[in-house]
Length: 229
Image 1: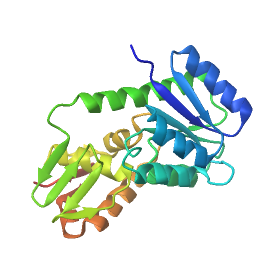
Image 2 (image 1 turned 45 degrees about the horizontal axis):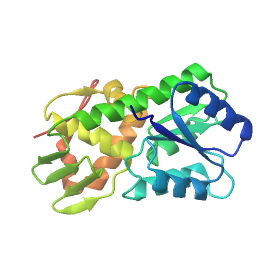
Image 3 (image 1 turned 120 degrees about the vertical axis):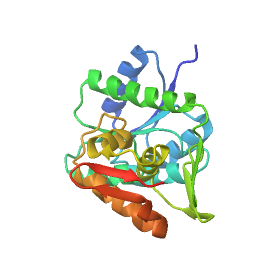
Image 4 (image 1 turned 135 degrees about the vertical axis):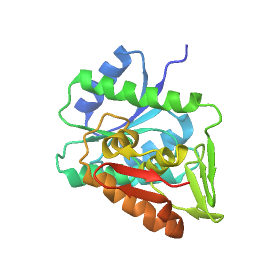
């Protein structure tokens, strides 16, 4: 069986060795890049199964690296686990908005690290196994899971990865009401802790970007959201 390949983009040698030791012990193949530019090149060249990305990098920071990963066809589908020494909620939210899938705050335990990596890889595996669910058409809306793209009236709508996942969840089952907690799980792979109001921010952004099509997303007071068919 092929070993999953993980790309670590981190400039702290001690953190790199901690990550390498614990991840290789679990059977993963680990590649390392010590700056953002090199990390982008390695991601495009090696197509890893997951990227562990430090926010505080020399030169190009982790947020910019994440943004560029999501902008390129060859790397936009690679899951990203942010590593951050910051505890401020705003830093985490910005990272998730840029397209990261989850985050891990330093210092972290090896057990938590491995659990987060496994959870993200399982989620990607489940998504790739779904048959007949790579494209959804709902009226003027078309969602393409393989490309993480949304079009409305044949016009491309620039959603972040988190926004796309939230919209994909709602559109899969029109009329079904999703709680904020359920939508948080879809955005963060069920691992990261994020407050409810950030779901509202995502929904507000999606509605604005979709224009008239945004009216399809209905608020169910006291519960969450649903998509009208």
